[in-house]
Image (cartoon, rainbow, N blue to C red; front, side, top):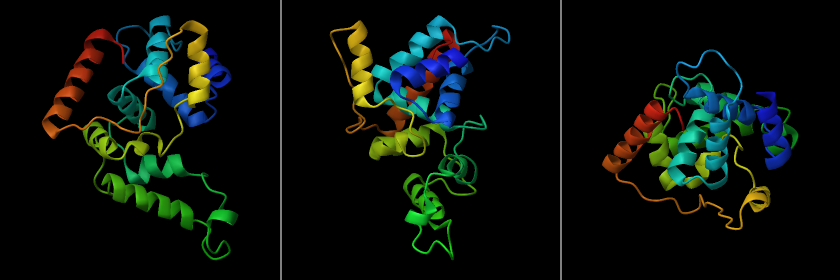
Length: 199
């Protein structure tokens, strides 16, 4: 596991510890019947790199959801994941309008803004289908709570080592899905994960 984290840090510039832990957890998550090995196997490593470097919108959105789902309950909640992932994100002396009176103002405002954008209320969690639907309208949400994608420069430099055909996927213009198509795609993707053991 440490080797996988070191590789992601050294070669792709991923430095956020929660993102590194989430990527490792996501790589191991789809295992079944393979004992309690905590090492990332070669096929899991290759699949994870494929999604990180060249994954399509749906693959990246589903991976983002898995990484951000800290407690593993298949939901994103404002008072759990949003609160934990945004913790220590601000320099309060700079971001707070009145640091002495209310230093937590930017943290609280950021959570309220994301709750408004995603529709994830305190008593209503965000499922994977709802998350992908929201991200198809607001693509920046895929990385809003946690920086987990390698930057384009690191991505293209790493791809150049192995291929002449460098592909940089864009989250800027995600595909538009109807609710029925989205549910079918998520169901098919989950079914593939369960039967193949891959992401």
